[in-house]
Image (tube, rainbow, N blue to C red; front, side):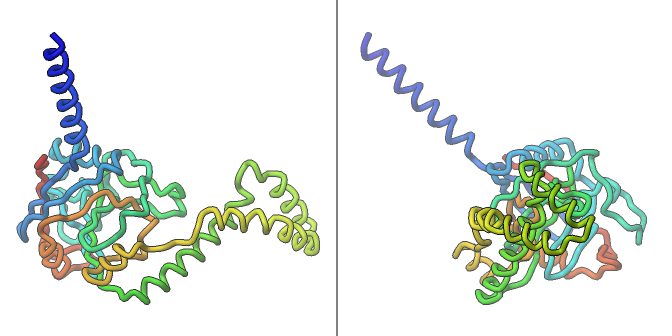
Amino acid sequence: MKKSILSFVLVLMITVFAFGQASKKERTVAIVTDYGTMKLKLYNETPQHRDNFIKLAEEGFYNGTLFHRVIKDFMIQGGDPDSKNAAPDVSLGNGGPGYTIPAEIRPEFSHKKGALAAARMGDNVNPNKESSGSQFYIVHGRKYTENDLKMLEKRKSMQLEQIIKREFLIKPENKAYADRMNQMRQVKDTEGINALQEEIKPLIDAEIKKSGAFTYSQAQIDAYSAYGGTPHLDGGYTVFGEVIEGLEVIDKIAALQSNRDRPVQDVKMTLKVIE
């Protein structure tokens, strides 16, 4: 009896372990074009983007759509349903399924060559960086030296500091400071404004220190140096997968003749979920 119970427990543990391993397995899809096939893996760390991409692919949403925006040394973009059977020279890029996806921006995923990322509206109308429900791009990019990336780190860190400073008075918990600042601005109390800025400076500096400087990992530096990418986009868009086979297809599509970034010869795609 004890042997039977032990055997059952062992089988159960193996089953649970196997299920856990299977649930961690990354989903893969294929994007088929006349210029070749790209095989991509989707990151489990960006589940909303992964699941949405799989759902649309299984529904055939992408089949017959175009890579409608192609810029050499930058990226190739697709996923606009309006691009199906679109007439030549028609401007594309505004279509979608009617919803957006919350940002899932993670620092470990960078815009290296072959990165799969979600397109989105600009920060001025989309401050939360929500992604298009269907449009995506695959990075082509160019190579960067380590010095290039170090300079970019400094620039991005400065931009982050400016954002923290700009948003400090917008936060609800800082309303009292905002009210005082507005009152002083109304009466043009320059001395009072300067004094208040000095008062809140330590609080802002503490937030900047807490957020930390923008940095690239050595692996990211190596990838940008060896293969290229678009590092200036890091931190601004959700990267949710990468090409694992068929990088040369990106090169072929990116090299096509275009008119206002749309390839003169349509590049249609078919998406297949592999596993």
